[in-house]
Length: 129
Image (cartoon, rainbow, N blue to C red):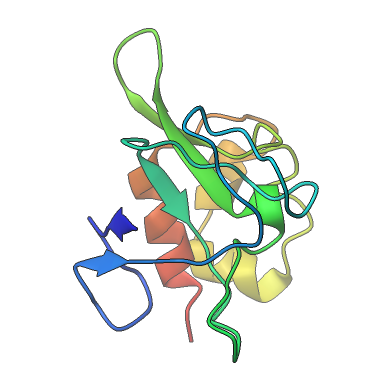
């Protein structure tokens, strides 16, 4: 269960509970489940891009480890959002329409893993229909 600090899409609930296959140990280790599925730790701040719930009530981050961004602090105390791949390829191969809607913001982050959670959410919001 996650407390929602900011929702870009969805029903605006103050918290969201997701169900995933497998168990999460207290250290965040996965005893069973899907290989590549992200792990979660109590108290961890994250940005999640989730699929809608399945008929069985399960969901997962879009692209598994690509859709879960852990919020970490840089050496100056700034907040950064990093996925399981260090944001590699995050701003690459965007469509012309996406580039136009982002108004050059993607180019500032292209080839660099650093992106603040707020920038990430603002860019995602600008891509919504």
